[in-house]
Structure formats: C-alpha cells, structure tokens
Figure (cartoon, helix red, strand yellow):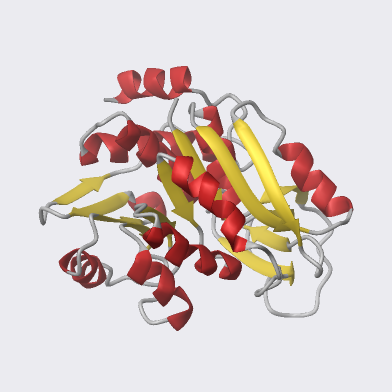
Length: 295
C-alpha cells in the first residue's frame, strides 16, 4: 500500500444550489437546495485517495468548536489518519453558492489562521515515511516546503484558479515538482505550463471543467483528455481534487500520462455524481471497472 502525506485544507461548508446565480439586486429567494458538509482541497484529496487504497496521513488546522468536531467525524475512514493543530480563529468555513452549470461562488465566512504557532519539525517523520507528499496552498503549509526539500522529497501541489501572477502562490510554484491548476482564471495556460517545465518541473496539468484537461510533460509532450459525458452532475465541489487524486492513483501504478489523466477524469466524474466531495462508493475496484468500461 502506497503512503501519502497531505498538508492543508479542511473546512466545514454550507452549500446552496440554485438554478442560476442571483441577480445583484435586493431580493428574497424562497427555494434552494441546501446542505452542510466537509470541504476544502486537503479534505477532498484525502478522502478520495484513502478510498483509492493509499495509506493517507492528513494534517490541517481545525477549531476547538462544533465545526471542528464535524470535520473530524467525516475523516473517520479506513486508511486515513487525521492529525491537526488548533486554529484559534475557529474552524475554517465557506459558503458555496452553486448554479446548475456547476459554477461556484465561494465566500470564506471564517478563514483559517495564516500563521499559526505550531511545531513544524514534527512533520519530518510523516514526510520522510511518505511515498508521495502533497502540499496544498494553505498559508501555513508553505513552512513545510523547505522541510520537504531538506528531506529530498518531491512535492505535488494544486494551484487551483491561479491567475498567472498572484504572488501568494509563488513559493508553492517554486518548490513543487508536480503542479496542477485550473484554467478558470488563466485562459492562456500553455505558456505558463511550458515555462514551468522549462524551469525543471516534471509535469504540469491544467483542468478545464467541461473542457477536459491538458498535461505538459518533462519530455515536452502535450496530452489532452476530454470529460466523460455519461456522468450525471449533482455537485461539482471536489471535482478538481478528485481529478488530482485519480491522476496520482494512476501515477502510483506506473501508468503513462494519458492513462493517469483518464483515471483523473473517471475520479472527477464519480465525484460530481455525489453531493459530497468524495463519492462514498469510490474504491480501487470501482475506478478500475470504470476504466475498463470507458477505455
């Protein structure tokens, strides 16, 4: 069983689903679909990868509050060990407003602490023992980047909707060996991908929602995959993290880039069929069965 250490990104979210985003006028909306659940990039990757057979260790900040207890309850899964430090600001919370096209407006109603006082050296044993290390772009996680480098560990990161110029992301870009991002705020994504591989990155992958995904390898190869239209969308929260996780599942098996991308597509498709950030039925058996069905 491959092991993975993941740092950063757990929240307890309120999710409102509407047919269309509201117009920017005072109004009352009488009907919506509403639920509350765990969210955020670290939790999404953690739940998905643990279901795909990885021995998963996940660290995040949570508050000493009822929302922290709810986050912890979602992370009681086989293959998953959750470690945390107390966020004095309380558990991170988001309000996500979704429309019928899967688009999202995310409002941070309680952000996490940027610079918590925690002992970063305690992570050395987890990083040392991990086959893969994922450092998400939570601000506190940037303090783990030099530790990973000191231990000669390759770093995987997810820049999400990076716009190509936000300085917040630069430490993660500079330190990482494998970069994932979305083209939502970077429509001219190929120059960035080429630039990063030229600087020594081993792989850059850019997802495009319904437009599929693009990879650029250290060999200068472009790989494109479309989505699978058979998956019926209920909720797109977590789809990017599911794609990342499906790709890493394929990577851990030694598959080529295209096959890894196809596993990412399947994992994302299964995610959007669920109202949760990880499909409760996801497993190694299911994702391999889906691969045989579609490819």
